[in-house]
Image (cartoon, rainbow, N blue to C red; front, side, top):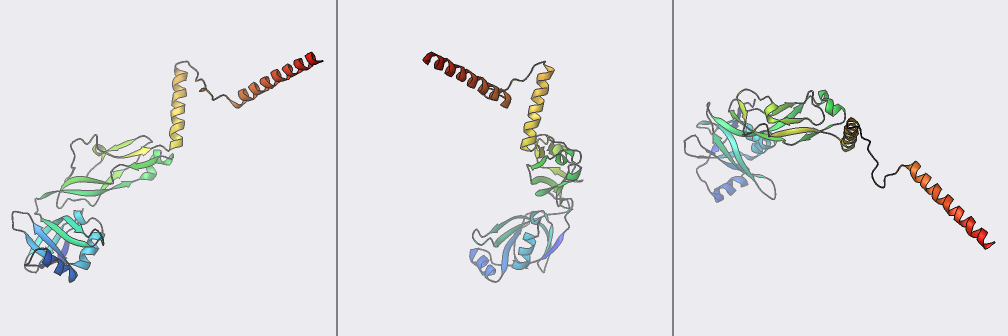
Amino acid sequence: MSATKPLKAEAREKAGKGAARALRRQGKIPAVIYGGKKPPVSIALDGHEAFKLLHAGGFKTTIFEIDTGGAKERVIPRDYQRDVVTDTLLHVDFFRVTKSSIVDVEVPVHFLNDEAAPGIKRGGVLNVVLHTVHVEAGIDDIPSAIEVDLTGLEIGDIVHASSVKLPQGVAFKAENLEELTIATIAAPTVVAEEVAEEQAEAAAENRGETIEPEEGAESEGETAADEADAKQDEDKKSESRKSQDD
């Protein structure tokens, strides 16, 4: 579970684009705290510290305790903006939370025990459909990641959300978990073709049939025999024409 992290900030009286630009020139990042049936509070963060937190991973799933010098607010980041050209951080929105708050967060998916998956050992490929998933959790139950155990999975197996064990206090933010596919174990192209061919042959044998070669797919021996017969016929015709000339 994510631990609460302390974060220092300064309360700011002025808001607006002009004040925000002035803060950025000072190496600070404007931010706001809202929600919790309280009025919004404008704050400023240290630009270097905010940059490190943003790129450390799990920023939007971390609970912060912001100290503005006069009060402490427990919050979770809800959104942030970056400059489209320089990619620098421009603004952060924080949402107030309490002990009883339930939040909707997006967390990464981690796959475990691939060495214990027979399908992967046989050359199968883990096809990740969802790299992140939306979950609901109490603020003290927010997971850093959802773990998916690959033990025992074979080629062709599908990992649905309904088969994933979640930590206590966490639930998927989805209606039909049976249809929410997180990953599959896919067969390599060559193996898939061989399996399909074997299945077709087995089905034909069960019906007492034989699989005829496709048109234009004669064996090399049959092709060589046909060419030899054609040459022999041509030699006979040549000898017949020679006899008539004599």
